[in-house]
Amino acid sequence: MTEPTEQRESLHEVKLTVNGGTRSATVTARRTLSDFLRHDLGLTGTHVGCEHGVCGACTVLLDDAPVRSCLIFAVSVSGQRVTTVEGLAGEPEAGRPSGLSPVQQAFHECHALQCGFCTPGFLTTVTACLAANPAPTRDQAVEMIAGNLCRCTGYQNIVDAVLRAAELQSAEVQGRQK
Amino acid sequence: MPEATAALAELGPSAKVLAGGQSLVPVLAMRLAAPAHLVDINGLGELDTVVADAGGVTVGALARHSRVEHDAAANRTQPLLAQALRLVAHPTIRNRGTTVGSLAHADPAGEMTTVLALCGGSVTAASTDGRRVIAAADFFLGPLESALRPDELATHAYFPALPRRSGSAFVEIARRNGDYALCGVGAIAELDELGVVRSLRCGYLSVSDTPLVLDLTREWEAGEGTVATRARDGVDPQSDLHATADYRRHLAGVLTVRAARQAISAARQAVGAA
Image (cartoon, rainbow over all chains, first blue to last red; front, side, top):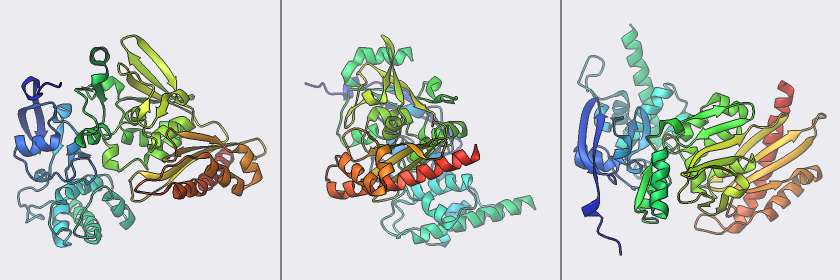
């Protein structure tokens, strides 16, 4: 007979830097990072699709690298830095009147989402991939999003958006250098 | 690390080691396993190492796939690492999953198990009793079953260097980009002083219960048709939802020839460059 686990499960304080701010909560060791973000921190922008690492909807940046937040226990990454979809946009500013990040702006312009459920995972993944490769070819853009599933768009507009985001980002960089 | 091995010694079979969790956590999520305890080694920074020397590459238990894949020295020493790692799931999974973890998971559909078997590597296991080194040939016992005892932590994997005058290749066919391969083949070809193939060995994934390695040197002398026939006869695939056994067997023949050609071509380049 297994005893009910709830009573004897120990609690852990998890402290993360999320989108630039320090956030903490006390949770069980079994709390996934995706549930921690959504339920304990109220950051519901990170979506949970398949809960076993296949769909990519829950992708967040952990110390700037994209990871599946549903496959990581929050307690394992205490002390580390997390960027969620909520951390991509900023305040409206010159050259970025909507406040949207170049990747978000490109998804908007290219109609790269329909129901939007998978979008947070795409946005975080593409943001990290463009940081590593700011000028991808179309083939590289396809490769960038190969680990994320979208059941609406058929992907073509998402690939367009990756390339458009690269353009917007490079225009921003040039604008800043002027 | 003493804390981790002490925990494993105390908890025994009720515990599983958690590293990257890219295989273990899905297994937990689907309720295929329900260990009472997880021993999380993500805090053991001393195991986040990739060390290449003339003999080979030693990968620590916390080195993520992506780190191994992009380690220039490691891939000069054993190019099979990056050749296979680029086929391990997706970059996002490789950012978290560990190379040693995928060996401990012992999935016969895993690329790194095949690489370890093909290059004749080994795994170092630590417990409160000390350390032992387990050769690849003795490490994989069955599907998802390794020679690690419940009280042991796999701390390092050792991948011997690619021999001189040699080339390697890794090819596979999957239904979708980044998905499990229906069949995969790694090859190491070595040339003699005259540029003739002295040795050709191939490693297989997804077509046997444990990583299979075939020596195809003599078959290569007889021609590509003989190589393909030997590969088809040598594998023992199962039918499942994704492909029939016959189709996987067919792929083994096709991919063996493809991998062999690429490895021999790489060996010629290595000899030409030297």
